[in-house]
Length: 102
Image (tube, rainbow, N blue to C red; front, side, top):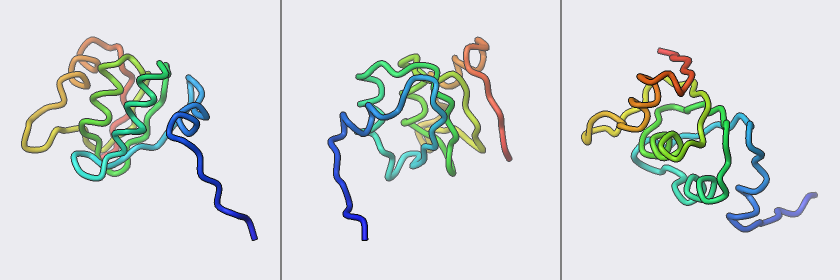
């Protein structure tokens, strides 16, 4: 039987190389924001995000910080707070490649 191994948040984010494809979820609730902030702090770049099931502030922060290259998503929204502004600018400018899955 394998023992569970715990690592620090910095080590967990450090195991994600720039250019990786990562799944991220949570939208506006249960979002892994500490992990997202650590990816930003470590200046990860060219991440391909797979949003499960809906993206929100987590995706918007990664786009705004210049960490995301592409996003596969059914929806990216800040819920009752409206559009995700960094996501919207990234898409409108063509800086972010998108793959929408309705």
